[in-house]
Length: 412
Image (cartoon, rainbow, N blue to C red; front, side, top):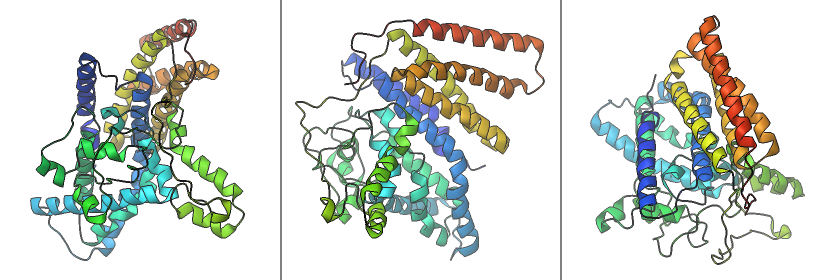
């Protein structure tokens, strides 16, 4: 088993998010919304769960090329690790930059940019499909003999570095640091939807790549965060397919097959000249701009939060025990986790079918947990305990469903 630093660091992520949340509450800074933060983390959960299967593609192909086609043998030393970290960050810059320049690739990466807030939870908002389009950028590292274990290590630490830069709590850092490293100020620019900021500051760790290749932009006025066409949903599955859906709608309107194909690899917003040409992002009118939001009853929010904590504990167990599970068990647990995050999104959106979906989710959740701990030959006492827990959850769900929605229970 190759340990991924990003999985090991999960408890630290939530500790730091908790600290930022407390500090912002004390400072009366409104940077967190429950529905937005949970959706951010839900996208990360979905990414980690699907990643358990997609790593067969990314790490598998890398390992195959390393074993069959590497040019030299590099020792697993500290110096090689440092060189690999720098090399990975260089290739990350280009993978990231192309994820903004190629329509198909943006379909994966756009997930990370969808939140209209900017806090540490946004760092966890990761795509489930991006690795499909970007893993090939790191193949040169396999050819020069960088061991797959080192690749996983440096990629994990690269992602770990990027966690802390997703915050508005830190303004400018010392000039020498801002000159070399990616910082919260630099990365706030990257997450902005203001036209002057779009497609800037693609760096992972070292901002020098942007300065070398002409994509650097210093932070000036406070950014407006998000994407040019807001997602307007708390559903993490829709978050991962929304851009592909828009692409399909566009492709159907393009008459020429050559332009249909070109559209896939052109910059997001591109259309043929005879259809109006490139659709440039518009300036954001901050006077009239309103973030997407929904209003749910406080008791329902408490219910979702408690259920979510249970889900996170189960997800952590799933990720830390992947090497002990067979494929069918992985699919069962992954299915319950993904079903759960969709259910929570439906509750936040006040969908009528969300409560029915959640009722079934509770059944699946208890049965899956029961199977995980007791297998197929349970003790009668444990069956009684599980049935009691399920009944209690169902009663709680019925009670929160009867709570009237607040007066502002509409999308805005």
